[in-house]
Image 1 (cartoon, rainbow, N blue to C red):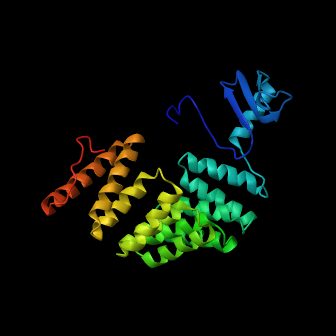
Image 2 (image 1 turned 180 degrees about the vertical axis):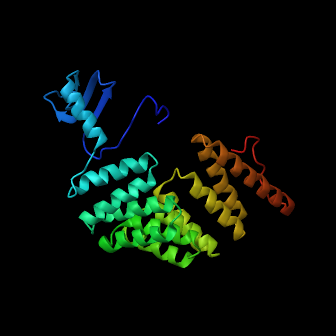
Image 3 (image 1 turned 90 degrees about the horizontal axis):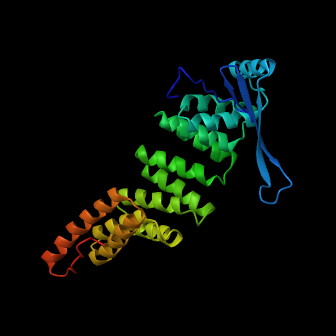
Length: 275
């Protein structure tokens, strides 16, 4: 993509991988195949050829990468690759083909919703997430995705409902607790938010962001010492994880909170590095 005059790249949507170099030679790769080796149970196989007929066949395949109109897997694979390469519209087109072939494919509906969201079409994204849920009522990811978009559109109650549905399906899904905590915070339900962040921390003790947001919620309800404890833990985790931006933001929040406690006469001094 950086050198379009020298290279042409195309997603075929199949298991084929090949390189044609100035029509002087070609390399054709095959999927991993089983071997008798215990060290390398699977190995990639590649063939280099200078046969003009083979090269011309590959060039023709490249120029006209038609897919079998009944091959939903090929369209799905190409859609996923197009999405990863930033071609959101191409991904939407391919996921639509998948749904034409298999109208109940919840994964395709969910993924098409993500692509539509990325292009700014939130209502269409919500419809796709709803379609995914309709075909698979246990689709936790689709519930969370729809909840996220609903929250962005101001439907906090709808978002909380979706996150709650996801939690009921999978009580150990930390992401659902976290985003429900955010939604509850925006609904001024600080205690409910604290409960959700606590669940995130129980499930994922290294989640620095959950400590940070629980600390903010504790500040709102006046539990300043608990807030300091959470913010210190968040700062330590952000530092350990190399997240400088959030580490600095947490330290600023700690210092601001510390000043309010100094005024109240009940603060403990922070160490110089903010840990």
